[in-house]
Length: 352
Image (cartoon, rainbow, N blue to C red):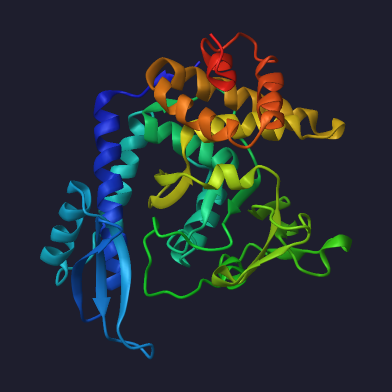
């Protein structure tokens, strides 16, 4: 089962995460004239950065809610705005210390892909890392190391059709994902399917052992299978059932290997329950992947039930709101766990 990381490693992780958050804000606004302002919306205060630069006239970019963390971040950015950014060497050194402390490292090629798309602005513009790499990042964020295997040659990203207010909005209006993949020089080519009307939602690198990058989104409307344009990322994404539930709650995390990368990943409890839903939707030819889905769900939900059961309660409540069929799918897959997760079925069904 999952093993807790040493307290010192968890402390280092928190320090590195906050340094990267500050660096992201500073990178986004250091070159613009303007300042931070506080706005009240629906009775709740939020912080924004206001600038008059650019062809659009005066604009404001969302920073975060008026809480202690955001105020400290704004104060640090103001104080350090004229100084150099954190050196990559210093950040890489902290990441190396995390490796020594037992944190999970991404493989070099996955880290290269995620770092390249992160630098292009994918996460700042609402992209979310999903799949096995998100699972590893969630473990580091919660201070645990998973026992299940994390090897994969697929890197998966997802994005909602519109960027929500809860995300940092930067002066970037869009990210060119295909161009970012080209700059990696891994030979990525668009994967065209007959049903996709020549709108690729995946890219494959034949010269690099068939590494694959997928882009997904939530299905809406009558056509729930055709590729969906995500203009701010210059991509098409494949609608996938249950994806809206997964993307509804996300948080900041780190991908570690060399220079660390600040990413967005799904909320842990939703990630675990979503894995059950996905496993229930696999066809017979994908039962190996279904077993992997269940294993990740089992390990994650077992940890959360022990350490943070309220997280599962909230995620289960949102799942129940989607209807009885969703609950039935999750319950059926949870019944295939090697051992029951105490309290899980009660939370899913409101029994007990």
